[in-house]
Length: 103
Image (tube, rainbow, N blue to C red; front, side, top):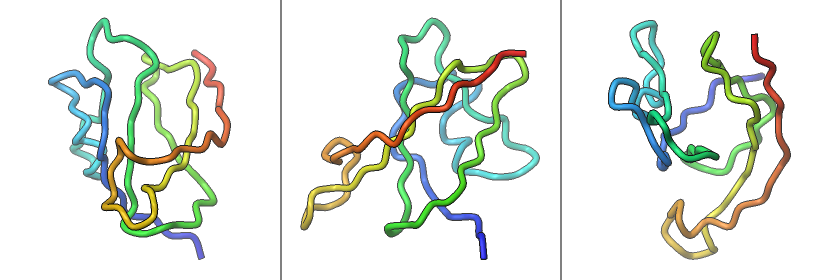
C-alpha cells in the first residue's frame, strides 16, 4: 500500500531568505515552499535523506505556476559502507530526468 515517506532536507545549493529550503521539511497549508536565491548559478541542487533505504515508486513535485524549472534530474545515493551518512561522501547514480513545460 502506498504511503508518504518521511524525509529531511540535508543539502541545498541556494535559497531565497523569504523561501528557505527548510520549508521542504514541513508539510502544511501554511508553508511557503522553497525558491533558489535570486541570480543564482544553475543547476540548483537539493539533497534529501530517508531514515533507511526505501523502495520509491512515485515522486510528486509541485512547481510554482510561473517560476517553473526546465528540467529535473533525479539521482539516488548512499554513503560508503560503514561510514556515517554524509551527503558530501555519497556515491550517486543518475536515474534520469524530467522535462517541465512552462505555462
